[in-house]
Structure formats: C-alpha cells, structure tokens
Length: 267
Image (cartoon, rainbow, N blue to C red; front, side, top):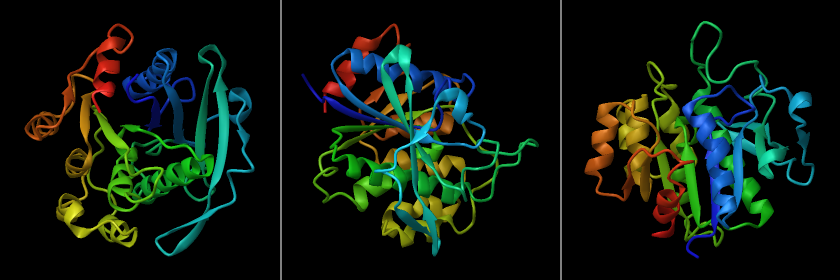
C-alpha cells in the first residue's frame, strides 16, 4: 500500500483563510489522499483572523497545556480542532495568546511583515510535533506547505531524529510563490541554535535570514520536493532541481492524484 500515514503541515487552509494556491492545495490534497486509503493529520496556525464560532473551532483540553520556551520565554500551547464536514477531515490548529491573537496572518494591514514571524514559525513547528507526540501517531511522510512550516523539517531531522515516532519519517516540501520581503528577525539563527539545530544545517540562514535562504535550508533537509505552482522564484526552482532529490513538477492535484500518490509511495 506504500506509505499510509501522512502529516500535512500548512501555512493556510481554505475555508479558514481565503483561497490561494497553498490554501486550496491544503484543503483538497489531504482529503484526496484520505480517499486513497491514507491516514492523515492536518495542522495549521490558528491566526486571530479565523472566526472560531463560524468555523466551529473548539479547544482540545487533553492536548493543550504544555509550555514551549521560545527565546527564553514561556508560551502556552493551545490546541484547537475543527472539521471540514464535506471532506470528513479534521484540522488541528496551533494557538498561543502571544503569537496568534492579532487579526492578521503574516503581515499587518499595511503589508508590513511581523517582526516575530521567526518565533511564530518556531512555535508552530514545535507545537505540531509535540501535539503529534501526544496523539502517539507516527507519520511516515511529513508534507510541509508554506515558508512558515520550514522550521519543522530541521527539528525532525536534527532534534527528533532518534524519537521512535519520527525516526523513519520522510520530509516532503512543496514550493510556492509565497516569498516575503526583506528578512526575518536578525536573531533567527541564534534562536534556532538554542533549539539544538546544528550550525552546519543553518549556514544559509546565518548568512541572511531571507526567504530564498530559508527555502534553500528547507530543500537541503528535505527528502523530496514538489512544485506547488508555476510562479516560484527561478533561483529556488533551480536550487531544487540541482539538489538531485526526487522532484514532482507542478500538477493539478485533483486531476493527477495518481501521480502524487505514486510520488509518496516511492519512499
């Protein structure tokens, strides 16, 4: 049957956020894989702009309550869940009152990206991995969508690589046109070192914590790559091609589900 347990980690999912390539892919791809007999779990951040009442989110008390230390400060981890009834699919949300209460996603109403997006990415990645441990569920493939998910492959490969739940997990990274301007916080590299990620894995981020170097870091640590849409930056696409890792070119996931399933099943 091939790899049967797939963890989807998404920057955004429709209908909780407006339609986009990432949001639509992460809405439909997990459902399609579930219909192919795969067991799935799906996670995204619980941004403050998501209407909890309309989307029927509720806290999962048994999964919440842990404190994660980010940059020497304690941040409570809150887990919420909602169901997409038409897909028979649950979505888990990573929440925290310091990082995700603002009524925005990654930037403010003027297009200015939040200075703490680096810590939000770390918190999100750790929150997902800690929650999956509490679920006692061992993913065989972890598929990351969107730049805010890119800390997670580093943690799986260098920090949790001896944990029985993650030691055999393969990382797939999808590449999109989701570039952000400028750089993340200048201390991002140091904060990742504190997470016990080795310096050798962070050289691109140490050089400059911008979008291109973040994605190059994610490509380096991933086991396989999918092209999410045709408009990704040429430098990122070329770097992915030259990595010589398994790569699936951009396909319509609803029309070419067999190609994606075959891509997963090779691992």
